[in-house]
Every structure is written in structure tokens, then in C-alpha cells.
Length: 390
Image 1 (spheres, rainbow, N blue to C red):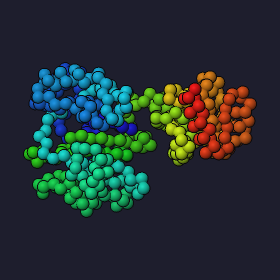
Image 2 (image 1 turned 120 degrees about the vertical axis):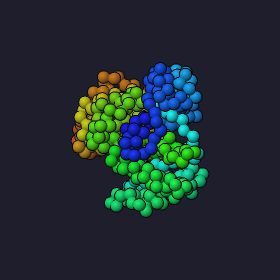
Image 3 (image 1 turned 60 degrees about the vertical axis):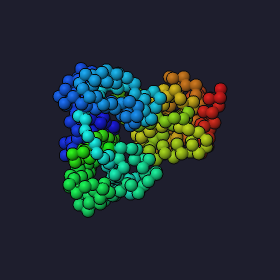
Image 4 (image 1 turned 135 degrees about the vertical axis):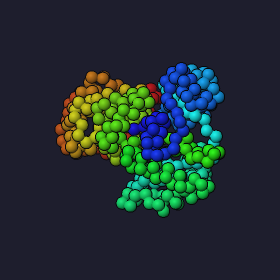
């Protein structure tokens, strides 16, 4: 789950990470009042779930409360387009009004899960304020990394190594160590998949603060954090993703033309790899999990074909707990109700597969069945291309 910058800062601030003074405003008048309380000169930051806001005009300076009100008037309700929003952009519904700081240096600090090591990795760099991916690509030596073994947790020697990577003056090295320690505790205790401060700034008077903050919580751990549920902003999520989550389904929008229904994350990855291998592009994938009912399958199918970019559907299911006859029942029911005109390719194996195939064959609907995964991917990709070409 992604949250807004002001929410991430509130969480990190509670852990002891220094953050600028700021308030959230949803109207121009609130922005003006916040600027007056913050001393007049402020920065206004559009709160959307996307990076690149500064380059898109979503971060602006105001030298007075009146100017802050004018900027807020233009920002709130506008559609902000960044390189992460797509061409449609996102509507700005609130802004963060913060005190202006005299920034001396910009640094980077972040924690993500290293999937190869299956451990958290803490990264810092003296080259902050730019995309860390670009730094990693052009000058990886500027990034210091520490992989933390959960069995021994973050140790003082880790912190000393990381602080050295920030090249800080002696006067704030202890503060930096405390900040990194707080960042790691927040990452662990909130079950985060990402915590990032970019830029982490040193002000001209020698203070260290998180000028920006990003925090993503692992969806699988949300049951342990009821206090975070209220931070979710459905307006920032795709409507089909919200709809899928209501029924316990995982839906991810992609950019191709083949809609993919699978059961299990591993099978989802393999299916999408195969679609790309045979020359296609997945439009999305919808993971119905291991124990979906026929009703859930029907809902999943409805969500899948609601995506206007879908030109063919590939259903790739390994029937374990989710029986193949149950899958067939849900798909047949949905296809009849929706009168789907797109080609539907099915490949299924496992429990009650013969019964499932019999139901599909006797349905009277025009399903395309395949015995192997690659064959199914080729049929779906060719069908999507034929549909696009008319």
C-alpha cells in the first residue's frame, strides 16, 4: 500500500526522523492560513502517489501567504502529469504546505527488500535530490549499501559504514546515525517494502532533515496494522484494482493487449514471461489465488474484460485447491452474462481437469483450449493481434 508524503513524514517523525514543519491543505484558504502559521515563506507540494512532481510543477515556492493561496488555487483540483502518472495524470486533492529551508546539501537514504538476498538493504548516497536509479546506472560507486541480516538486526558497525558513505561533517554524524537507525525501525515495525528519503538535506545551519519521504507497506502485512488502514487513498488507485481488492483478488494493470487470469504469483510471472516470449504484451494480470469460488472467478473475469485494452483473454490455471470445474463454471457464467466477443484461451491442469474441459466443450461458447502453457500463450497473442488488425 502506498501512502502520501505527509503521511509518510508523520510516521517517520514519530520514529524520530527530523522533518520540516508543515500542514496539509485542501483549499486555498487553508493553504494561506498554514503559510501564515509557518512564517510566510513556504513550499507547496501536490500530494499524489507519483514521483517527478517537481519537474511537473507540483512543487512550488511561495514567499507570502497570499502567494501561497494563489498557487494553491491553481494546484488544487488540477490534473498533474508526471513521468510516473501516465498521460492521464492525477487530480491534486490536497497539498502539503511546509516551511522553506535553506538547503546546503542534498543526500539520499532508503531501505528496500533485496529479493536475491531475501533481506533488507539500506542504501545511502551523497548524491541525493536526483533519481537514485540514474545514479546507480551512471555512477554506482556513489551508493553505499548494507544488507541487514534479520538475525542480528542493524548493528553500530552498519551505521558507521553508512554514515561514512554520506561524507558528513563530524558535527552531524551522530544525528545521521540516529536517523538511519530510526528509518530501519520504521521499516521493520511497519512491515514496509520501501522507505525512502530523497532528498535528505543538510541545511546551511547544519541541521539534517527529511525534505521528502516515501513509504510503502507490504499489502500482505496489512492485517497486522489496522492503524494504517485509514491512510489508504482509493482515489490514488486504479478503479479496477480497488474493485479487485474488494473481492480478495490481486489485479495489476499493464500496457499490452492480452488479459491474463492466473492462480498464484509464480504462475502469473511465468505466464507473462511466455506472453512476451511469443511476441505479445500482457494488458494486465489478475491472480485469483488458490481457493477462489465460482462467484469470485466470475467477478474476476468481469474485472479482467473491463479493461478496454484487452483484445484476447488468456486463462492459465493449475487446479489444486482451486478445482478446474469450479474455474470452468465461473468463466462460463461470466462469458454468457457479458456476451464477450474477444477470444478466450484456456489452459488448465490439475484437480477435476477432465470435468472442467467437458463443461467448457458443452457450454456452446467459443472457448479456445490448449494443453501446454506455450501453446496457450501463442494462441492468445495471435488472437489479440488478429483482433487489433480487425
